[in-house]
Length: 171
Length: 186
Image (cartoon, rainbow over all chains, first blue to last red):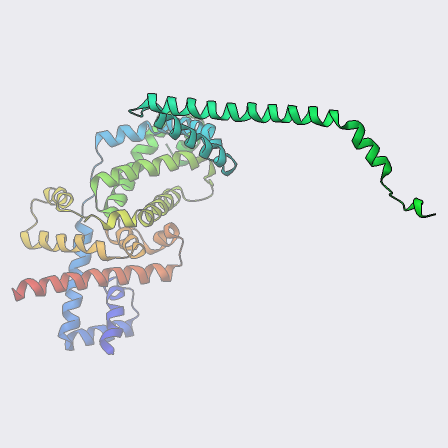
């Protein structure tokens, strides 16, 4: 218990920052306790070694870099400006457009680099023709239906007039 | 030229004043970064980043405040932020390598082998200190700052600074002691 307490006082003791009573307490303990005395010796060594660590000179290269730090800032600014001009591409609202563009690009590249492109062309052409003939058949059907409706126009009108909508015939 | 005048000239865009500012503070900032990060090249890059920051925030400097403390606070904040940001990246490699230490050893030819060995252990021990303890010990025991100056730089109460220095020193002392015991035991 006492060792723990003394341990906390060792560094202030080294700095001569303790009041006389605490100083005496530390000194008496160090005389009696070899492990704390060893720790104090290590602490003294540590502080000595740290104070001996020299201040290093900076390299000429670093000095030049620091002198011209302004240019770095300008470079950074122009990079940032370029980045902010392109930033709209990263907005969430733009994501569906980007996704669509990516799909189109993927399809286009698959088409362009496909080893058997002529087969794809033929398939597309075939599908196109099938589609076209389906549409033209539909159009001709619609035309004949319209014609038949025209022919029966009179009959339809007459039968509509005969329909008893309000129950008047009973009176 | 007084530092306040140099700063004012820098703010007017004087290249000469900027060079004077670099000459006055680069060595101090570089050494702080070097002792804190443990890598020479890393410290050079960090010093450059700190000066970039300084250049950008010079206009915010309050002339009623101590410029030395202000610039050191800026450097300290950058170093600790950067250290935390790059934590994962650093875990992959071992820092505080021997090469850096060799540069130190070369400057003290009279120092004996034992002393160099102790220096090496303490230097390596820095790795295990938390950023706050490490910064406090560097400022106090390597850069020789007073507790009051450190309190100003680190923006914490005097009592906290003293406690950090004490704990940092004790941690290093225990590392040194255990290494010594290990080498005697072998």
